[in-house]
Length: 566
Image (cartoon, rainbow, N blue to C red; front, side, top):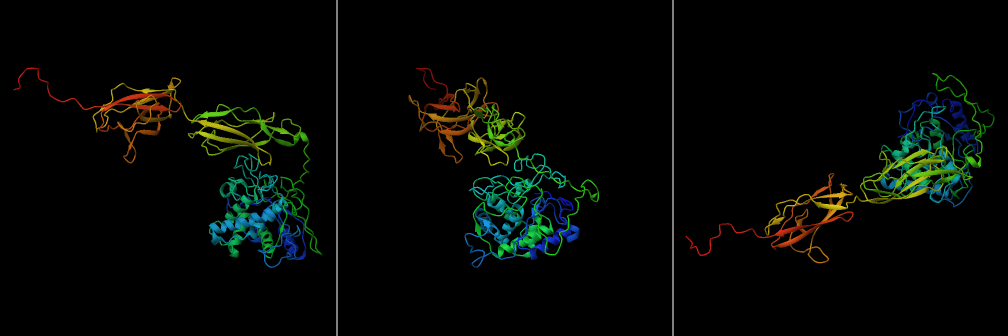
């Protein structure tokens, strides 16, 4: 689960004074601007105690403290009977609202005792991502670009080292909170859900993220209809009393009623914007209550000094607009050939992609995630199904060695710019079964049996491929007729299946590590004669073995002709 820290992420950023202003604004302001809070509430001022490590879904990443307007949303009754449209100020974008309600229904079907209300998900979604940037999501509910929290590298924030190799947040050194509900990767690895049924668990998808948040809030047999359980659930998401108060105010607001607005028309908190990064910059300040002056935040303590030190964090410089040569336009195949391998072997070809900029030139330091997809047991070296790497100076990056498993068939590998809504490059791969080009008996003993008995000698064969041992090769054994075009014989020698029934064809046989195969016991029926057993390998090698069913010779010494018997 998520990493949790006893000290605040941004020490001093949320003081008692700021919390007091937020409470005052709720009671005296119509619609205050958004403030990006970059830490948990002061535990000493609020009387709360930081929880143990590993208990916050967001890693206590920043959140927005804009408060609901005082006017109750215009509604014809209850929040379950909402008008179709309304102002962006109090409305929830259609896809976002649908995701919250679907999550409520799904959780109710599997954990009805939790009593999860969709309005709680809406309240958390509001403070974490401004309802996913005002509903800027595609038809499947995925944000057009990822919403990423600040890098948790210990510089002004807590230190959370990378747990996902950059697969979700594009950072292979440290973690960042990701998506509409701001899960850190380690929490998503445990709680991630597929809420829209597309076969993926994507923290950037509102349906997946809302369902994951719902299940996370319901953990530990909580009943969210109880105030104490609801408070504990919210604090488990971000351990801050100020966070709890902000979520609670939006929760109460949405319970009084809200309405659906078109996707993309929702209000976006100042400082969040429409970009991919929600790291704190210079958000618009909240207006002060009438007749009061908003206190200035205390300087952020130096996390390297005991007691804080009192140094002031420098104001972040605005990020310059990237030039066309610095803008990622997509990734493309960088010359990867046909991907084929035999079961158990490594693919000789390595997958290689190239990141290109808007001018078509190479782009370095682009995070690319390679993912093995499909019904297969193939994987990258080390058994990994997904790996994330950075492109080099020439814009290219090569995936680790891809290894075939024991399952023959086809699968795909996707290479995509990590966390970007850009088309991936898809590679088709084929795993073929092990083959043999020759198979022969390991001895030349005659194989005979009396009618109604079993053959005393075991049939053993050895398969080879280009003169080398052919291990793990599939073999089929069939008792065949002596016709010009042989078919399965319906009489003569036979095998027994697991139920003791007579069978004359065996499949799913495989050679061992030394290329040999010993057949099960062969039985003779009551019909004497000479019969044929054919063994065929994957790859087409065959051997035909003769089996004789004959009565044993009579015992005793024959008498010479003309000699009277005694």
